[in-house]
Length: 76
Image 1 (cartoon, rainbow, N blue to C red):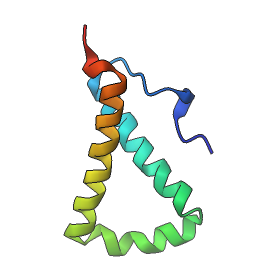
Image 2: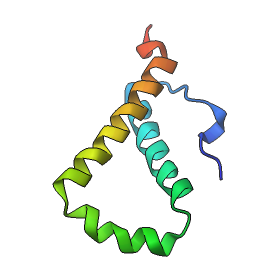
Image 3: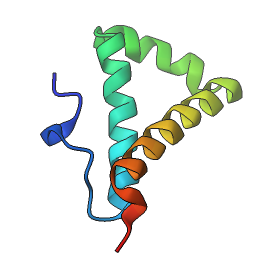
Image 4: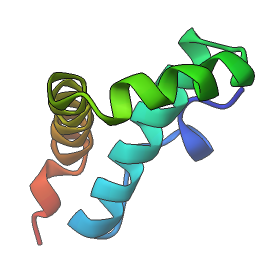
């Protein structure tokens, strides 16, 4: 499983950085819970739980901060 696509966090734009952050968060979940059927079963529980969704957005925010730092915040 490739956890960092292309082995780089460098993106051309902040939008691509955000997409990468979401992808990294999703790949992390897949790496931790490797059984796809189990992930599917768990989805119904967290999809309707505000606290779970808030925690998920926090994970994406942390990934985005990491990507942004790797890109020097997209300095020109």
